[in-house]
Length: 486
Picture 1 (cartoon, one colour):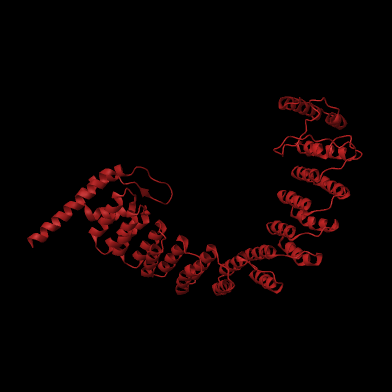
Picture 2 (picture 1 turned 90 degrees about the vertical axis):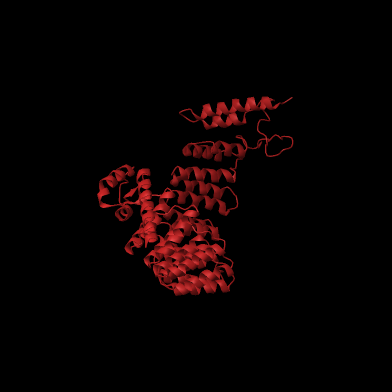
């Protein structure tokens, strides 16, 4: 009785013999195939069986009319070859045998092998054999061919595949056209050829779809040809090709890139009227463009409309608005946006706070800025050294020494770093002139590592921090005592 053990043993033996034959300097394909199809012992006759079924294994009987076995066996032998030329020779040898017909998969596998081995001149021969084999032509083989040339970065060959399909009396499908267009527009200098193919495709019975238009619109926008992209959008509507969210997004970004934000807003309105829900990137692009054009009222209205139109504003949208208001010295409006974030369940991040504090400092609202610094630290965010430096400089410029020192203390207690400029402003306000040598020693101990470049950041030493804190407490105590004696 045949067992799994005997099957495994015989399988290993035959595979070993095949490997030995294939490794010979002169390939004797006839010997290989004779070994494949020679009469086997009773135990090995049923070696090749179907493993796709979970039922009882059924033997596969070789084609009795073919002297070299079944197309499946030949296909596996071709697939197992690492050398594309050897795979091609096996393919050719099998093709010459009477009553033999390659499987469709053998053609596809060989095309991929030859393409990845860059034996492009041999691919046409495989195509001709596929054509004469009697198989009905499908788009799969041309999909493989486009894939091969795309991987090899040969846009001219990719383009020629379209006409090869026509030569084989096969009408390309929109997916073939789109893949070819995608490859062409990704190569510098091939945009015009892609456009010409797109325009002529209808003459060959290929109807471009939404993806086709999107590919070209995107390419022309990136090429700074917004007018052509917009004309293509109009052609879509004329030819009853329905634009999608990507179609609008491509044009909105194109208009914003050219600074034509009003045109982008018209597209957004058209998009919303037709029931499309813009994606987050489209809103981000519009908000940023409106803010740069200082159309802050329109930008804020758009931010409020987002939620009503099914797209909740996220951190990027809110931060864009905060930055827009701060750039125009409208920090109080930026503060309102921060409050909106919290009420809508969107938590600010360190960028939100840093931008707002910077905007408040630019307008001289240092007390408000200090409140947001404390809020920022309480939420676990690490303030950039520029934030504390901006606040300290502002307080010092108005003679508010205690407030400046409060900022330093808050930052130090949180274990954060201070800029050397900050120390240069604070130390003279706290210490007496006769203590300069002592301060110099503390500063030398405080600097753990000088960071190269233009950052000039120092880590605060424990000794300097403790010393300055004690000096500040002493100053405050003396000030209280003076007030009591008045």
